[in-house]
Amino acid sequence: MGGSDLVTVVVPAADEERFIGRCLDSVCAQEHTELQILVVDGGSTDRTAEVVRQRAERDRRIELLSHPRRNIPSSLNLALRHARGRWLVRVDAHSTIPPDYVALAVERLREGRWGGVGGRKDGDATSAAGRAIAVAMGSKLGVGNSLYHHGTREQQTDHVAFGAYPVPLLKELGGWNERITANEDFELDYRIREHGHRLLFDPRMRIAWRCRESTAELFRQYRRYGAGKVDVALLHPRSISPRHVMPPAFVLYAALAAVRGVRRPEVALAMVAPYLLAVGLESVRCGSRLQGMHERSRLPLAFASMHLGWGIGFWLGLVQRLGVRRDAGQVGDASDRLGT
Image 1 (cartoon, rainbow, N blue to C red):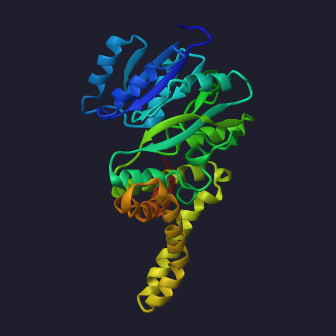
Image 2: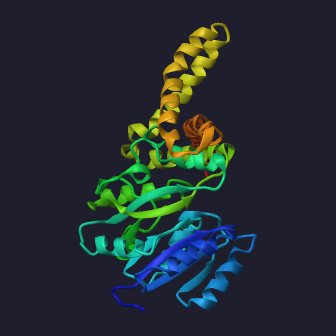
Image 3: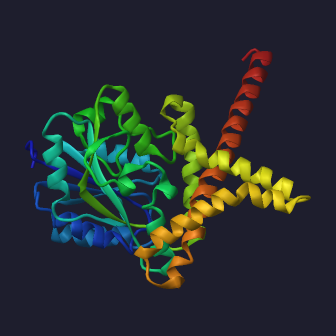
């Protein structure tokens, strides 16, 4: 299985016993059968590794790699070092892919025009809150111009979700950046574009991604995303677009409105009224995709959790990074004074 048609599918996983079986079943059912399936277990404390071993006994294409660090970039790089395929396709552990997913990715990569390809990331959930979150994540108000959430036509893009890449290109670029803990795919895609390669969004490729099932979990997820974006912004300032800075700007604006609201509540309400109106109108528009008021009523909170989570996370991440740099500078100054 070392031929040019071999595809390495990489699945980073940590405590995913509820989903990893369905994920691997969908990968093993691919029409493109020449696969090396690498599951990188990041120190799971549940039955994730056991489930993978059971699947590996039935399908020899599955390999389990143990990795003690719960760091997705380092897990991906471990898989890259073990990759034997010509192409690498990343699949999230709580996702499933249709049978033609890998074949479509290989078809586009073989054209030789693309440094990476990816498709639609469609939310999947079981609870009322989760279904509302899935709809919010497919809205431009929720995610801006992130094509992979709502795009419907093939086009060049700046970022692909769970991308497929030529393995030689990934190795040439040194793989994923292990110094960042979130936005690792966006950072990789930025470097790919900086090296003169293009990225393709093909909506025929669809991945069903199990989203968060509560707005509290969604808020924590987006707070982590926002904090992670700080690392990317410091590394690549030119990679920042309006959709990345609007949530932090809104958090500052909302904080200002709250301060004004202490003495003038009507002023605070007037300041945030446009946002409330936009969320309300979009919730009505998207609500047609949900069943009943029990689900539709969760949409405004889902939008707010995404925006506030990202914005608050960005400011917390920035404060933390500036504090780390200041502490490092103080240590350096002390070393200079000591002559070390």
